[in-house]
Amino acid sequence: MTENPWLPPWHSHDTTVTITDVRTIVTAPAGIPLVVVKVLTSEDGLYGLGCATFCQRPLTVESAVQDYLRPQLIGRDPSDVADIWNAAHLSSYWRSGPVLNNALSGVDMALWDIKGKRAGLPVWQLLGGRARQAVPAYVHARGRDIAEVTEAAQAHIEAGFGHVRVQIAVPGVRTYGYPEVVPPQGTTRRGIVSNGWDPDAYLRLVPRLLEHLRTELGDGVRLLHDIHERLTPTQAIRLAKAVEPFDLYYLEDPVAPDDLGWLPLLRAQTSTPIAIGELFVNRAEYLPVLSDRLADFIRCHVSAVGGITPAWKLALAADLFGILTAWHGPGDVSPVGHAANLALDIAAPNTGIQELYLFPDAVREVFPGSPEVRDGHLWPTDTPGLGVDLDETRAAQFPPPDPLTRDGWTATRRTDGAVQRP
Ligand code: GCO
Ligand code: MG
Image (cartoon, rainbow, N blue to C red):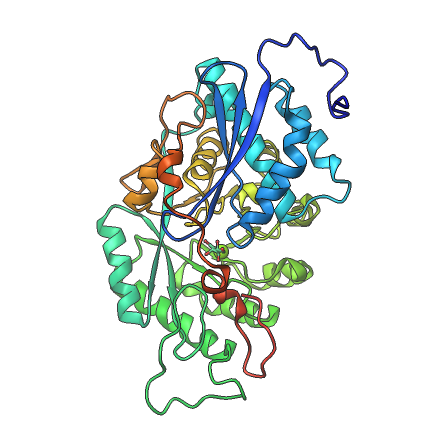
């Protein structure tokens, strides 16, 4: 059998604990495919779990782990977290995309989980200990109309959340954040595609929504809104200026990663706080955002940037520029990934807010130890490692759904029939 070329020069064949296997579990207890990597070791009962969730391409990530990373890892010392990240990242030569980064994240988080278990410490202690007692979280409120969004936001406020993201349907089109709703009778539709995305209708609706919410909910609640790349940069500038009176906590993804060059114009024209980064997969994307302070929050999907190792470096780099973290955390982050977010959030000096998914019971049953929410905050535990386990028997009961049904929302088209960034 050929020697593993990725073994480091300090590798010793009598290393006490070695990696003996790497497995990938794809499970969808809430209908959202979650990808978890399990790294097994030669020490009885010692294994680590990491999140590799790219819900649009779960099986591709699984192949990247099983066919390419697993062979590099067998026999390695699981304590070599940094070297394994560096070697695996470069081993594909072409690198820094969502699939390979997610695969790498699953391994990386699992190794941090193992390191904590062996040290008898939670990962947030390994990162330097508490910088805060608990982490403020935000949840999603959405509706087909202003009244429904208001009702949903009020429910979250009554549940103790001080931060709420609000999204509203634009009648008749596939809007980000809410299923398509039938337009009222007599709605004039422009264009040749009847349910084509209409940025102007969205642009008119959101300021009305936020004005109503501020009137109804008062100034106490911190409101967030996600443009989700659905406007042209100039339209995004117009919206950011129009919502200034409503004091958003942040306005998210005003432009696509392809249009970062527009951010300086946006920043020069508005005081509305900006969050961006959910779609970042290459650290070259976040450098101008940090160095020119083009956003107030960095929003990366931690597994899409490669796991805890790069995200921790990013958090500390952002701190140098006064930029806060707001790690991506909806339903297509597994509870293992949410636990990694929580570890970063507790230890980082510049944690802003944590996006949160209120896990259904089915998810919590597959993932015992999923992070707990109380009083609108996420609370750490002293459980060694990331603190989340995986019930593989239950996980097997939830195979991933058909992508044609699950990912249809990314097939949005504009009124002229052209594809729209989803
Ligand atoms: C958010 C995100 C998500 C993404 C989803 C894609 O701010 O939480 O925009 O809603 O659309 O994670 O799979
Ligand atoms: Mg988003």
